[in-house]
Length: 112
Image (cartoon, rainbow, N blue to C red; front, side, top):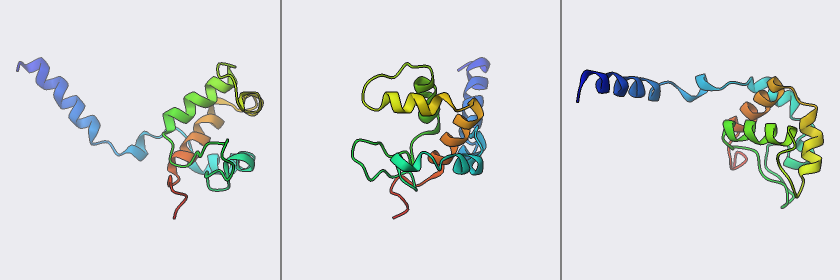
């Protein structure tokens, strides 16, 4: 292994040691405050009581950001897309990041 490969391997190893919480882009508390409207379908703790609505608790933050941005851009179709497009259109990029951080911070089992 040459010096260049060692340097690259060292950068990857250092990146793996960064705590996940420090990589979060959104503000969890701001997301919690914004999530009140989401609770109607996705549950108070991100666990939906309605089978056709997905659980948001414990989802990966980047997935939630991508999903909300896709709804906002009209790139997701079918099912509840019209409802979600209406909701996502009103969200700023900061709102999306905050909501994603909040739901990603919740336990996927609803805290059971």
